[in-house]
Image (tube, one colour):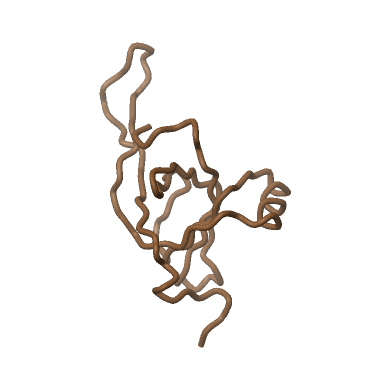
Length: 119
């Protein structure tokens, strides 16, 4: 049965990279722990600009969003991760298990033009 919260495989047409911060034991000049984001998995996704309604709704929750990314359910997904899509860095600001059936995950993101692909 098709519904508004299902996705067919044809809708997942973009290969995105899931990235996590690589924590090292080395310290930089300021004493902090340096870390770059590294890709640990690539998954197929639907990536689209957020609609005006979605942006307004997110702002009411004190979040800013620019993109909605939908992927097949990914157990253990963390908001500390980020997404690399078509050379753009998308920081995760919210996520949910659509329909709470562990089939589809909706990820709200903000594009970070101030960051490069490494850090």
